Image 1 (cartoon, rainbow, N blue to C red):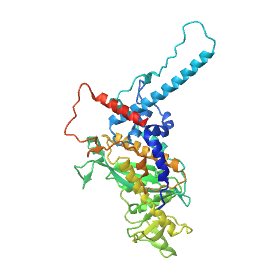
Image 2: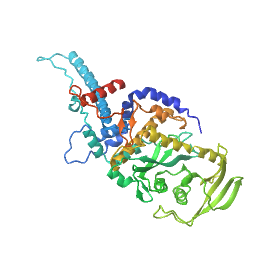
Image 3: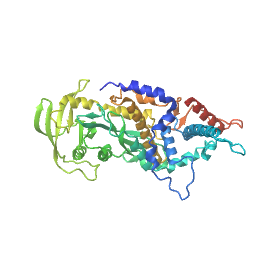
Image 4: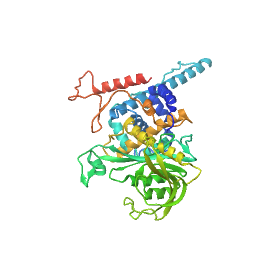
Length: 464
């Protein structure tokens, strides 16, 4: 695994930008992709505080916070609104000053002297409400297709450095994990956990399958499904998203005839360990421990596919390897180029661990190990926006490192991440700033709204 020289540079990005995470995310937010989208489909359109763009930006900012509550989300947007108000006020004042200087140079006309009053646009004249109802409804109006467009726009296009490509192939790693979901009726109906066909009393869980690009650390694509759906079934569909001339690094689970057959049909190469015994026909011995073999269609086909791949046979390369710990194991690869040595393929496969680190970052650092939404649709929106935000952070870091290789040996996503204070999360994913024996009382002189606004102003002062 290559050394992570990008950490030093990304730390500079952190030092310069982490104090203004709002401005940074707003600057790199792909707003141009969403500008062409139709506004919420309503008979009567009216000016809204939370437009599609504002709502998605707020959701993206919330994904970078430990406190992902609606209250904190509205505070974040309040800070954006205040920053915009200051910026526009400065621009109006400068324009008014220029106009005043021009009028002073011009010949004075008879009549009452002109007044130079600074007038802000109507939507900025008053502070926005910190009530969470408007933002909650706005999230519900955002279409899932828009969150997917946001995810697509967050990816780096045509990334190329010495670590993204290998012998002309674009390198990807794939794996799956589980995410916990809220125990609501609608989510339990779709994501309920069962044991031997009987519903479990535990919390619902979703299966998250991801493909991560080596060299950028970004998520290339993902799918969320019930945990009782086969990982192979999810991954089988995701192969269609991969560009030709790609290579996949996978674990032993994916050493499956249907997966290998589809990869070969799509022009995608792969490297997988062969822990399970498989019958094969020896075709050629390149050297000791490096052979070309033929694999035939198994008698028992996979049950997770409605229609299996066509029966046939194909050639694989069988390589005997020794791990850094001294254990012997076998790799199967569809790469048959004899000019590529077995050592190169072995070293390539050792970098598959990148996907494990990437998944850990996504679940723990981006804090989506527990999805907080209470409906399947909102859970998918929350997940998609969080993954898009993760990609945006990776995009910013990639821009700072350019040709330096990505290696996840150190948590430079964590260095970039905004941590304001310690947050306590219960099993349902609810966030608390401190444990309490009961509800905190309020008094007439210091209402909850005043407290929330004071907190927002304090954050805004720290940001500026």
